[in-house]
Length: 77
Image (cartoon, rainbow, N blue to C red):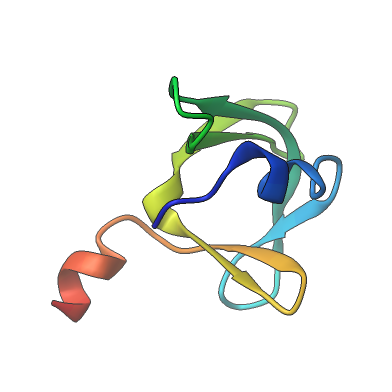
């Protein structure tokens, strides 16, 4: 999935959710490549820890960022 920083940047400061609707933390940063494509996101968890998740674990649904567990795409294939 290719997502540009401009598309995902508008979600900075918003809550990232799990597929079950529980909050995973707040989106506080984006890591991009030279083409300005997001490669991973930085999430500030409730515990205060910084977590980084690859873009492959994300899905945007109805204006909300949903974080899927690792291996979700592999299991579907």
